[in-house]
Image 1: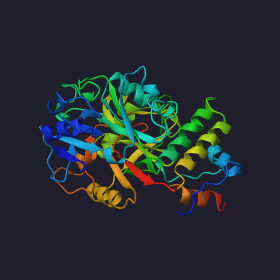
Image 2: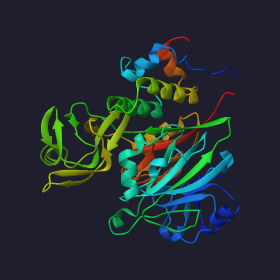
Image 3: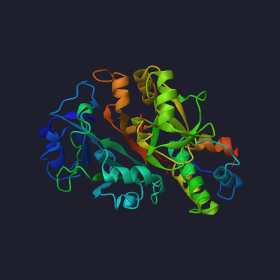
Length: 78
Length: 332
Protein backbone atom coordinates (compact mmCIF):
# COMPACT_ATOMS: atom_id res chain seq x y z
CA UNK A 1 0.00 0.00 0.00
CA UNK A 2 1.37 3.46 -0.93
CA UNK A 3 2.39 5.74 1.95
CA UNK A 4 -0.41 8.12 2.89
CA UNK A 5 1.02 11.50 3.87
CA UNK A 6 -0.15 15.00 4.67
CA UNK A 7 1.58 18.15 3.42
CA UNK A 8 4.71 19.32 5.27
CA UNK A 9 4.08 21.42 8.38
CA UNK A 10 6.05 24.27 6.80
CA UNK A 11 3.26 24.91 4.28
CA UNK A 12 1.59 28.25 5.04
CA UNK A 13 -1.87 26.79 4.55
CA UNK A 14 -1.72 25.15 8.00
CA UNK A 15 -1.45 28.57 9.64
CA UNK A 16 -4.15 30.01 7.42
CA UNK A 17 -6.55 27.19 8.38
CA UNK A 18 -6.19 28.12 12.04
CA UNK A 19 -6.47 31.87 11.51
CA UNK A 20 -9.49 31.46 9.25
CA UNK A 21 -7.76 33.09 6.30
CA UNK A 22 -8.53 29.79 4.58
CA UNK A 23 -12.16 29.17 5.43
CA UNK A 24 -12.32 25.43 4.81
CA UNK A 25 -14.50 23.01 6.75
CA UNK A 26 -12.91 19.60 7.18
CA UNK A 27 -15.26 16.69 6.55
CA UNK A 28 -14.19 14.88 9.70
CA UNK A 29 -15.81 15.87 12.98
CA UNK A 30 -12.69 15.90 15.15
CA UNK A 31 -10.87 18.25 12.80
CA UNK A 32 -13.90 20.55 12.73
CA UNK A 33 -14.12 20.91 16.47
CA UNK A 34 -10.39 20.91 17.10
CA UNK A 35 -10.03 24.00 14.91
CA UNK A 36 -13.19 25.50 16.49
CA UNK A 37 -11.76 25.05 19.99
CA UNK A 38 -8.23 26.16 19.09
CA UNK A 39 -9.50 29.42 17.60
CA UNK A 40 -11.31 30.07 20.89
CA UNK A 41 -8.19 29.22 22.89
CA UNK A 42 -6.05 31.52 20.74
CA UNK A 43 -8.50 34.40 21.12
CA UNK A 44 -8.39 33.95 24.89
CA UNK A 45 -4.59 33.78 25.03
CA UNK A 46 -4.54 30.11 26.11
CA UNK A 47 -2.80 28.86 22.97
CA UNK A 48 -0.29 30.24 20.46
CA UNK A 49 -0.79 30.01 16.73
CA UNK A 50 2.39 27.95 16.45
CA UNK A 51 1.19 25.40 19.02
CA UNK A 52 -2.17 25.24 17.25
CA UNK A 53 -0.48 24.40 13.97
CA UNK A 54 1.47 21.64 15.73
CA UNK A 55 -1.76 20.13 17.07
CA UNK A 56 -3.63 20.39 13.79
CA UNK A 57 -0.74 18.83 11.90
CA UNK A 58 -0.47 15.98 14.43
CA UNK A 59 -4.16 15.20 14.20
CA UNK A 60 -4.11 15.23 10.41
CA UNK A 61 -1.13 12.89 10.49
CA UNK A 62 -3.06 10.53 12.75
CA UNK A 63 -6.03 10.59 10.36
CA UNK A 64 -3.98 10.94 7.20
CA UNK A 65 -6.18 8.53 5.24
CA UNK A 66 -9.44 10.18 6.29
CA UNK A 67 -8.22 13.73 5.48
CA UNK A 68 -6.72 13.04 2.04
CA UNK A 69 -9.59 14.65 0.11
CA UNK A 70 -9.55 17.65 2.45
CA UNK A 71 -5.79 18.07 2.01
CA UNK A 72 -6.06 17.91 -1.76
CA UNK A 73 -8.73 20.63 -1.68
CA UNK A 74 -6.68 22.86 0.64
CA UNK A 75 -3.12 22.26 -0.47
CA UNK A 76 -3.41 21.01 -4.03
CA UNK A 77 -0.25 18.97 -4.46
CA UNK A 78 2.52 18.13 -2.03
CA UNK B 1 -19.41 -10.57 18.93
CA UNK B 2 -22.57 -8.82 17.76
CA UNK B 3 -23.85 -5.69 19.49
CA UNK B 4 -27.23 -6.80 20.80
CA UNK B 5 -29.27 -7.75 23.83
CA UNK B 6 -28.07 -10.69 25.89
CA UNK B 7 -29.39 -12.32 29.03
CA UNK B 8 -27.73 -11.47 32.33
CA UNK B 9 -26.38 -15.04 32.54
CA UNK B 10 -24.75 -14.68 29.13
CA UNK B 11 -23.21 -11.33 30.14
CA UNK B 12 -21.80 -12.82 33.35
CA UNK B 13 -20.18 -15.54 31.25
CA UNK B 14 -18.73 -12.88 28.92
CA UNK B 15 -17.34 -10.94 31.88
CA UNK B 16 -15.77 -14.05 33.39
CA UNK B 17 -14.23 -14.83 30.00
CA UNK B 18 -12.47 -11.46 30.09
CA UNK B 19 -14.41 -9.76 27.33
CA UNK B 20 -14.04 -5.99 27.03
CA UNK B 21 -17.48 -4.40 26.99
CA UNK B 22 -19.82 -1.47 27.40
CA UNK B 23 -23.05 -2.68 29.00
CA UNK B 24 -26.40 -0.91 28.94
CA UNK B 25 -29.61 -1.90 30.64
CA UNK B 26 -31.95 -1.41 33.56
CA UNK B 27 -30.63 -0.93 37.09
CA UNK B 28 -32.03 -4.36 37.96
CA UNK B 29 -30.22 -6.07 35.08
CA UNK B 30 -26.91 -4.33 35.88
CA UNK B 31 -27.00 -5.18 39.61
CA UNK B 32 -24.68 -7.91 40.86
CA UNK B 33 -22.32 -8.19 37.87
CA UNK B 34 -18.87 -9.59 38.67
CA UNK B 35 -15.65 -7.60 38.35
CA UNK B 36 -14.07 -7.42 34.94
CA UNK B 37 -13.24 -5.36 31.86
CA UNK B 38 -16.50 -3.47 31.56
CA UNK B 39 -18.40 -0.30 32.25
CA UNK B 40 -22.16 0.14 32.36
CA UNK B 41 -24.88 2.76 32.27
CA UNK B 42 -28.64 2.67 32.66
CA UNK B 43 -30.80 3.16 29.62
CA UNK B 44 -33.74 1.11 28.40
CA UNK B 45 -33.76 2.45 24.91
CA UNK B 46 -31.78 0.22 22.64
CA UNK B 47 -32.41 -1.07 19.18
CA UNK B 48 -31.54 -4.67 18.57
CA UNK B 49 -32.38 -6.65 15.45
CA UNK B 50 -34.89 -8.58 17.43
CA UNK B 51 -36.46 -5.21 17.89
CA UNK B 52 -37.57 -5.24 21.48
CA UNK B 53 -36.14 -3.46 24.51
CA UNK B 54 -36.42 -5.61 27.61
CA UNK B 55 -35.78 -4.70 31.23
CA UNK B 56 -34.29 -8.10 32.01
CA UNK B 57 -31.67 -8.05 29.26
CA UNK B 58 -28.40 -6.15 28.79
CA UNK B 59 -27.22 -4.54 25.60
CA UNK B 60 -23.58 -5.36 24.91
CA UNK B 61 -21.07 -3.39 22.86
CA UNK B 62 -18.02 -5.66 22.68
CA UNK B 63 -14.54 -4.40 21.83
CA UNK B 64 -12.54 -7.56 22.58
CA UNK B 65 -11.56 -8.42 19.03
CA UNK B 66 -10.01 -5.02 18.29
CA UNK B 67 -8.40 -4.40 21.70
CA UNK B 68 -4.70 -4.79 22.40
CA UNK B 69 -5.25 -3.74 26.00
CA UNK B 70 -7.87 -2.04 28.17
CA UNK B 71 -8.38 -0.33 31.50
CA UNK B 72 -11.33 1.00 33.47
CA UNK B 73 -11.48 4.25 35.41
CA UNK B 74 -14.05 6.22 37.36
CA UNK B 75 -14.19 9.99 37.61
CA UNK B 76 -15.98 12.61 39.64
CA UNK B 77 -16.35 16.32 38.96
CA UNK B 78 -12.87 17.05 40.34
CA UNK B 79 -10.82 14.72 38.15
CA UNK B 80 -12.91 14.28 34.98
CA UNK B 81 -10.58 16.84 33.41
CA UNK B 82 -7.95 14.06 33.26
CA UNK B 83 -10.08 11.77 31.11
CA UNK B 84 -7.93 12.17 28.00
CA UNK B 85 -4.59 12.26 29.85
CA UNK B 86 -5.19 8.78 31.24
CA UNK B 87 -5.83 7.08 27.91
CA UNK B 88 -3.55 4.91 25.80
CA UNK B 89 -1.36 6.35 23.07
CA UNK B 90 -3.49 4.84 20.30
CA UNK B 91 -7.05 3.89 21.10
CA UNK B 92 -10.30 5.35 22.33
CA UNK B 93 -12.29 6.02 25.47
CA UNK B 94 -15.92 5.09 26.01
CA UNK B 95 -17.74 7.00 28.75
CA UNK B 96 -21.11 6.94 30.38
CA UNK B 97 -22.17 9.41 33.04
CA UNK B 98 -25.48 10.03 34.85
CA UNK B 99 -27.68 12.83 33.58
CA UNK B 100 -27.78 15.93 35.81
CA UNK B 101 -24.91 14.74 38.05
CA UNK B 102 -22.09 17.10 39.01
CA UNK B 103 -19.59 15.20 36.86
CA UNK B 104 -22.04 15.46 33.92
CA UNK B 105 -22.19 19.24 34.36
CA UNK B 106 -18.42 19.60 34.71
CA UNK B 107 -17.76 17.46 31.63
CA UNK B 108 -20.41 19.18 29.58
CA UNK B 109 -19.22 22.72 30.21
CA UNK B 110 -15.46 22.14 29.97
CA UNK B 111 -14.69 18.96 27.99
CA UNK B 112 -13.47 20.67 24.84
CA UNK B 113 -10.77 22.43 26.86
CA UNK B 114 -9.51 19.32 28.72
CA UNK B 115 -5.85 18.51 28.07
CA UNK B 116 -5.20 16.17 25.12
CA UNK B 117 -8.96 15.90 24.48
CA UNK B 118 -8.58 15.43 20.73
CA UNK B 119 -5.71 12.94 20.85
CA UNK B 120 -8.04 9.91 20.72
CA UNK B 121 -11.84 9.62 20.44
CA UNK B 122 -13.91 10.06 23.58
CA UNK B 123 -17.39 8.73 22.86
CA UNK B 124 -20.34 7.55 24.89
CA UNK B 125 -23.75 8.38 26.22
CA UNK B 126 -25.60 9.92 29.12
CA UNK B 127 -27.08 7.32 31.44
CA UNK B 128 -30.72 7.94 32.22
CA UNK B 129 -33.96 6.35 33.35
CA UNK B 130 -37.14 5.57 31.50
CA UNK B 131 -38.50 8.76 30.01
CA UNK B 132 -41.48 8.84 32.38
CA UNK B 133 -39.20 8.36 35.42
CA UNK B 134 -36.96 11.33 34.61
CA UNK B 135 -36.56 13.47 37.72
CA UNK B 136 -38.07 10.76 39.94
CA UNK B 137 -35.46 8.00 39.78
CA UNK B 138 -31.65 8.28 39.59
CA UNK B 139 -29.77 7.02 36.57
CA UNK B 140 -26.81 4.83 37.40
CA UNK B 141 -23.37 3.91 36.16
CA UNK B 142 -21.12 1.07 37.26
CA UNK B 143 -17.86 -0.55 36.30
CA UNK B 144 -15.97 -3.79 36.51
CA UNK B 145 -13.72 -2.28 39.18
CA UNK B 146 -16.28 -3.17 41.84
CA UNK B 147 -19.66 -3.66 40.18
CA UNK B 148 -21.33 -1.05 42.39
CA UNK B 149 -24.00 1.18 40.85
CA UNK B 150 -23.67 4.89 41.62
CA UNK B 151 -25.53 8.01 40.55
CA UNK B 152 -22.66 10.48 40.60
CA UNK B 153 -19.65 9.00 38.82
CA UNK B 154 -18.54 8.87 35.22
CA UNK B 155 -17.20 5.48 34.20
CA UNK B 156 -14.68 5.15 31.39
CA UNK B 157 -13.41 2.16 29.43
CA UNK B 158 -10.09 2.83 27.72
CA UNK B 159 -9.28 0.54 24.80
CA UNK B 160 -5.82 0.38 23.27
CA UNK B 161 -5.69 -0.47 19.57
CA UNK B 162 -2.89 -2.28 17.75
CA UNK B 163 -0.69 -0.11 15.52
CA UNK B 164 -2.48 -1.11 12.33
CA UNK B 165 -5.83 0.30 13.52
CA UNK B 166 -6.98 3.79 14.41
CA UNK B 167 -10.30 4.98 15.85
CA UNK B 168 -12.23 7.99 14.62
CA UNK B 169 -15.39 9.56 16.06
CA UNK B 170 -17.92 11.01 13.64
CA UNK B 171 -21.35 12.52 14.12
CA UNK B 172 -24.52 12.71 12.06
CA UNK B 173 -27.10 15.40 12.54
CA UNK B 174 -30.23 14.85 10.48
CA UNK B 175 -31.46 18.39 11.04
CA UNK B 176 -30.01 21.52 9.47
CA UNK B 177 -29.81 25.22 10.20
CA UNK B 178 -32.84 27.31 9.23
CA UNK B 179 -30.98 30.38 8.03
CA UNK B 180 -34.31 32.21 7.75
CA UNK B 181 -34.61 32.35 11.55
CA UNK B 182 -32.92 34.96 13.75
CA UNK B 183 -29.29 34.53 14.84
CA UNK B 184 -29.07 34.11 18.61
CA UNK B 185 -25.79 34.55 20.50
CA UNK B 186 -25.30 33.93 24.22
CA UNK B 187 -22.73 35.85 26.29
CA UNK B 188 -21.70 32.94 28.51
CA UNK B 189 -21.28 29.16 28.54
CA UNK B 190 -24.04 27.26 30.30
CA UNK B 191 -26.97 24.89 30.29
CA UNK B 192 -29.23 27.75 31.43
CA UNK B 193 -29.37 30.95 29.43
CA UNK B 194 -31.34 34.16 29.75
CA UNK B 195 -29.90 37.28 28.13
CA UNK B 196 -28.74 37.02 24.57
CA UNK B 197 -28.60 38.96 21.35
CA UNK B 198 -31.18 38.23 18.68
CA UNK B 199 -30.04 39.40 15.26
CA UNK B 200 -27.58 41.66 17.06
CA UNK B 201 -30.10 43.28 19.39
CA UNK B 202 -30.34 42.61 23.16
CA UNK B 203 -33.05 40.06 23.97
CA UNK B 204 -34.19 37.32 26.33
CA UNK B 205 -34.22 33.73 25.20
CA UNK B 206 -37.26 32.67 27.26
CA UNK B 207 -39.25 35.53 25.82
CA UNK B 208 -38.05 34.62 22.32
CA UNK B 209 -39.16 31.00 22.70
CA UNK B 210 -42.50 31.83 24.31
CA UNK B 211 -43.57 34.78 22.20
CA UNK B 212 -41.92 34.13 18.85
CA UNK B 213 -41.06 30.44 18.44
CA UNK B 214 -44.07 28.83 20.16
CA UNK B 215 -46.76 30.85 18.36
CA UNK B 216 -45.05 30.23 15.03
CA UNK B 217 -44.16 26.54 15.39
CA UNK B 218 -46.53 25.31 18.10
CA UNK B 219 -43.74 24.39 20.51
CA UNK B 220 -40.14 24.91 21.61
CA UNK B 221 -37.98 23.52 18.86
CA UNK B 222 -34.25 23.00 19.28
CA UNK B 223 -31.49 25.44 18.43
CA UNK B 224 -28.58 24.56 16.19
CA UNK B 225 -25.13 25.98 15.53
CA UNK B 226 -22.14 25.17 13.37
CA UNK B 227 -18.87 24.53 15.17
CA UNK B 228 -16.63 25.06 12.17
CA UNK B 229 -18.86 22.80 10.09
CA UNK B 230 -20.02 20.40 12.81
CA UNK B 231 -23.79 20.85 13.25
CA UNK B 232 -24.52 20.93 16.98
CA UNK B 233 -28.03 20.89 18.46
CA UNK B 234 -29.20 22.30 21.76
CA UNK B 235 -32.49 20.70 22.83
CA UNK B 236 -34.79 22.73 25.07
CA UNK B 237 -35.43 21.18 28.47
CA UNK B 238 -37.29 23.92 30.37
CA UNK B 239 -38.58 27.37 29.49
CA UNK B 240 -39.00 29.28 32.77
CA UNK B 241 -40.95 32.41 32.00
CA UNK B 242 -40.91 33.66 35.59
CA UNK B 243 -37.12 33.65 35.72
CA UNK B 244 -36.73 34.51 32.04
CA UNK B 245 -34.50 31.48 31.53
CA UNK B 246 -34.22 28.56 29.16
CA UNK B 247 -32.38 25.39 30.21
CA UNK B 248 -31.07 23.14 27.45
CA UNK B 249 -30.07 19.47 27.54
CA UNK B 250 -26.53 20.48 26.65
CA UNK B 251 -24.71 23.74 27.30
CA UNK B 252 -24.71 26.56 24.82
CA UNK B 253 -21.27 28.15 24.42
CA UNK B 254 -20.63 31.87 24.42
CA UNK B 255 -20.24 33.40 21.01
CA UNK B 256 -21.65 30.50 19.00
CA UNK B 257 -24.31 31.60 16.49
CA UNK B 258 -27.56 29.71 16.96
CA UNK B 259 -30.61 29.47 14.74
CA UNK B 260 -33.71 27.31 14.90
CA UNK B 261 -33.55 23.93 13.21
CA UNK B 262 -34.97 22.76 9.94
CA UNK B 263 -36.04 19.22 10.82
CA UNK B 264 -35.11 16.25 8.67
CA UNK B 265 -37.86 14.16 7.09
CA UNK B 266 -37.59 10.39 7.47
CA UNK B 267 -35.11 9.84 10.30
CA UNK B 268 -35.11 6.06 10.03
CA UNK B 269 -34.31 6.15 6.32
CA UNK B 270 -31.64 8.80 6.89
CA UNK B 271 -30.11 6.70 9.69
CA UNK B 272 -30.01 3.54 7.58
CA UNK B 273 -28.76 5.34 4.45
CA UNK B 274 -26.04 7.24 6.28
CA UNK B 275 -24.70 4.45 8.50
CA UNK B 276 -25.18 1.86 5.79
CA UNK B 277 -22.95 3.80 3.41
CA UNK B 278 -19.96 4.13 5.75
CA UNK B 279 -16.84 2.40 4.47
CA UNK B 280 -15.20 1.97 7.86
CA UNK B 281 -16.21 -0.58 10.50
CA UNK B 282 -18.52 0.98 13.07
CA UNK B 283 -17.38 -0.32 16.45
CA UNK B 284 -20.31 1.27 18.26
CA UNK B 285 -22.89 3.99 17.85
CA UNK B 286 -24.90 6.13 20.25
CA UNK B 287 -28.01 7.98 19.20
CA UNK B 288 -30.45 10.43 20.68
CA UNK B 289 -33.71 9.33 22.22
CA UNK B 290 -35.36 11.91 19.96
CA UNK B 291 -34.63 9.70 16.95
CA UNK B 292 -35.90 6.63 18.81
CA UNK B 293 -39.26 8.27 19.49
CA UNK B 294 -39.48 10.77 16.65
CA UNK B 295 -38.29 8.28 14.05
CA UNK B 296 -40.24 5.35 15.52
CA UNK B 297 -37.12 3.17 15.63
CA UNK B 298 -38.32 0.58 18.14
CA UNK B 299 -39.07 -2.75 16.57
CA UNK B 300 -37.97 -1.64 13.13
CA UNK B 301 -34.93 -2.58 11.06
CA UNK B 302 -31.81 -0.49 11.62
CA UNK B 303 -28.46 -1.16 9.97
CA UNK B 304 -26.56 -0.75 13.25
CA UNK B 305 -27.85 -1.76 16.68
CA UNK B 306 -27.14 0.71 19.45
CA UNK B 307 -28.07 2.64 22.55
CA UNK B 308 -30.44 5.61 22.51
CA UNK B 309 -29.84 8.15 25.22
CA UNK B 310 -30.60 11.54 26.74
CA UNK B 311 -27.36 12.91 25.39
CA UNK B 312 -24.52 11.52 23.34
CA UNK B 313 -20.83 12.16 23.72
CA UNK B 314 -18.21 12.77 21.05
CA UNK B 315 -15.55 14.86 22.81
CA UNK B 316 -18.45 16.96 24.16
CA UNK B 317 -22.06 16.53 25.20
CA UNK B 318 -24.36 16.50 22.19
CA UNK B 319 -28.12 16.48 21.64
CA UNK B 320 -30.15 14.86 18.89
CA UNK B 321 -27.05 13.44 17.26
CA UNK B 322 -25.78 10.07 16.08
CA UNK B 323 -22.24 9.34 17.25
CA UNK B 324 -20.27 6.61 15.50
CA UNK B 325 -16.91 5.22 16.56
CA UNK B 326 -15.24 4.06 13.36
CA UNK B 327 -12.18 1.86 13.05
CA UNK B 328 -9.79 2.38 10.16
CA UNK B 329 -6.94 0.15 9.06
CA UNK B 330 -3.91 2.38 8.54
CA UNK B 331 -1.09 2.10 6.03
CA UNK B 332 2.04 0.79 7.73
